[in-house]
Length: 159
Length: 159
Image 1: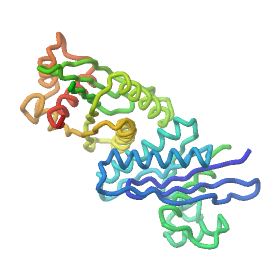
Image 2 (image 1 turned 45 degrees about the vertical axis):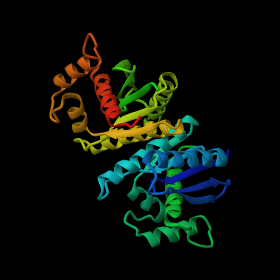
Image 3 (image 1 turned 180 degrees about the horizontal axis):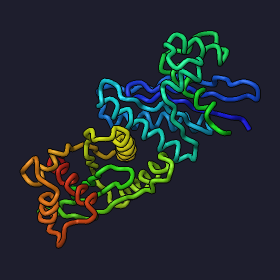
Image 4 (image 1 turned 90 degrees about the horizontal axis):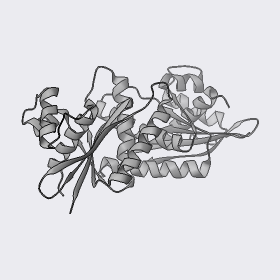
């Protein structure tokens, strides 16, 4: 069976995604990018736009599992709650389609990608480039983060 | 135009709802209750069950607006984030149907219902019973809270 994993770096202004697939020998990066929403919109409209885009990605890319970064508390608790609202929508949409949903923690992602739980961003990005045999570091950062999230989830999942 | 407002007290174990409608003279309570999910289920399945039930309520009761209690940080931040995930799903589903979505704060609810920002639960419940001409205090508490949320939202909304 072809293994297909969609990683998501949840956010309301910028939501990164990275789709990876196992070809029988290696994990390949199939697609990566970022969903953006405008700051001036009502929050439920931003959730709607992110939800529709994620739904379309799932339809098109057909992952078996969705991996989300787990939240930790940042400076702004309001932001943390709004990111949690985005996470809720994505988990709901994945569950509607019967996909497996797992969360991965920031230090777990660093450990899975670099072997070191406190790796910095450039180290992470170079490893993502190497793991997926890419010619360049994936841009923007949110997309590279989402590929790291997908890779970490792929190690944890039981296919 | 008939004014119809669905209030929701978001939660993942118990999610209260209260549907109110304006008959041209008074606001009437049309329906109230609570959606429950089992603690042993995967969280995305709990989100799925709540989402499906809320979606069915919106289809059936046809509110023009959905009012949600806004979060404040409780003892457990994990719980607050999970409640935010539920809020995200509900806002998304309301936005899919083009409904207005507003949030109301705990002290704002107390003020709207009793005229006093620090009212206690029995005072709130007696006022809800009086406002909607009910023969008894609505049960369970989550449903009474949702009616208070709907009432507060109805005062804030511009129909």
